[in-house]
Length: 318
Length: 253
Image (cartoon, rainbow over all chains, first blue to last red; front, side, top):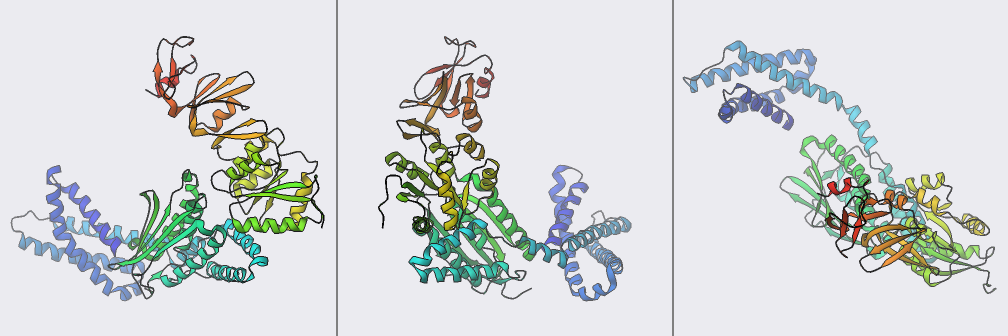
């Protein structure tokens, strides 16, 4: 939906630029096109949406022909209406008009067909599986080492650590293609951090700001844990004194906003390449699940590394 | 129970994680039956490890690679410059780059979690084996050091790279100039130029200047074949620029 609206608007703007007699006339032309194009776009989207199941039965060629005819008819109706409203305005000949409409509809359909093929469920699933966050081997071996060190001195704590580790790996190795509640993700993050705390002691400090978090909001599994792992690896471990990681999850309107902050230690820029891997991975998974409605940003702000993720607030699978 | 004799190996444990240190202690205790040893001290990073080595006699260092402040790799490079360096046994959980570099340069290491038998074998190997060479460590390192080390009477003094104004080759040694004083180190100017490519610029066959230390350039300088000299901001010293390196002046203008 969002994509088609953006695409048609871009085409309208481009057409306005082409049609305008001079550069100064571009905004005016754009406005004229928009006044005409936007209502048509909305009516088209609503109609196509309603006729979706029926169109699907026709197959690609049939549906395309039908949509083209429908769009031309719709455009003609709008054109006539516009002609009566804006008297004296130069109107376009029908053929030219129909050609433009078929062209725009064709481009849009071709684009969506290409996109659907690229992201067809099977391919998307395979990609999500391939993209599933992989934990650093560094973490696994160091954790086992820490647990081994506790075996003799503090068997109870060693037990708990192994339980946490087991839970963490259960999720890591699970089928993570479907969305899961953020509450689960937070629990997982806590277990992960408990293991890291074993190794790093008071060098690792965590501040949770999740009072306003809707625990039922659905997120891609392992959307936070790899980022927290990054924060520990790049923000805490390289520093002698350690530092604080801040995890902030809240609802902002109809969006779930997740923020993760960690300090940037002196000379810590050298691991940036490793950092990007996790970011790219999560960004792609967000896109596969939410398309353009999710966003992810990472930046250095006030001496801290900040990652912000926004996704639509959903509690049931779409 | 036998008291550790004078030939007992004196061991230093260096790791930033407390559980990892305590695990090594447990394992060393297990090795005692077959290998006479004393644990001299523990260090939480490379800097602390070098301090212990300056203070105490150390025969073997168990050195974690990934540590804050000064990592194991840099600490090892400073240690290897000593006249009688302790043996180094690297320990690491996983570090794809380091492991590959170690294999290529035939440097031994222990993978965590470490087994007592492997540790014992590594300890035994230090007896009679030749220590890891500075050249092998330099080749295996993937990052420039943050310090140069000055070795005087068995002690290691660290000079932060960021404090250095210029480096000048003099006969066998290299003079390291900071705002406060001068040090002599055994290093090759060419190798330092490669290692600290970003921070230093060559102005003469025998001289590298820290880019940050350059205050300006002076024309018609004495003792300069090109007629130009670099003026050091902090000390006002003038260093001749050779004709071949004359182009660097343009870089700064």
